[in-house]
Length: 299
Image (cartoon, rainbow, N blue to C red; front, top):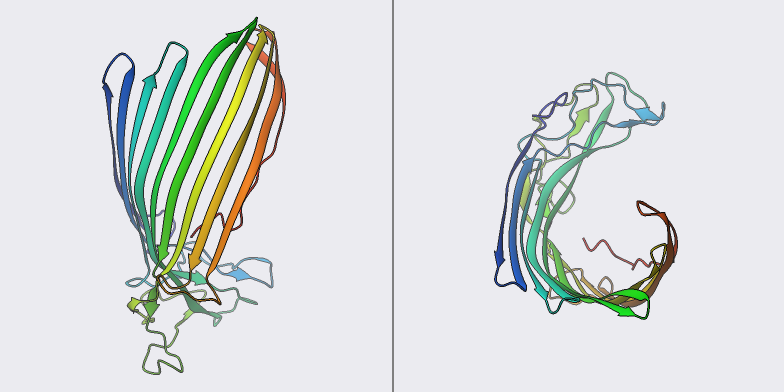
């Protein structure tokens, strides 16, 4: 149960397992698996009172959802495998592959705002629904090489990353009374001071159309850290990313009015200087760039 909140609860179950196998002096294999599922009563808090520009002055325990209908259930299953290989005394290769699926299903009530609070003030029960499934597969492979050139020591890091992500959403349909559904249940109004969480509100009667977002990402990078002497280091690197995003309002059905696609590439860099006046202290300055793509939150 959640302290100080009527009807709200949070249940979680999970497990994390890992196995590490030293195949040889040069090869190490690591596999790990992560599982989590949750079952909660979603809680969007209290109505906002526009007359006081603050949360409504109600009992802190007040909950504005519908028991017996509202829910949120999430799940996660993620498997990761890592291979570390010592190619030589100065060169190491690390490759990590991950595949997983997460889900997020919910019917959530969101309390509306009010203009003032009286004994008869009510708010409509507004519910949002979703049924997300996110499938992800990706690999990142990196090679690290150390070498001496004259009196300088170089640590060169280079790598590639690839991933594919698919997010589908099939929201829940509520039996809300409307012009097209005259036999449905009228949207319920909750008394703000004393909300009835067991009211007869529109129930779930099915699922809607499924939307789809796909994202393919390819990246490559290289960076060199140069130790000039015990007191000075310089470093610099560059990274190139390509994002290919596609959205379908209804999965497997093209809709020119709402489907969209964006393919964007970025080049970013990073450079800096490190000064070590003492062995246990550093002073550094760096300059870098970064880029965010449109629609980076795929869900």
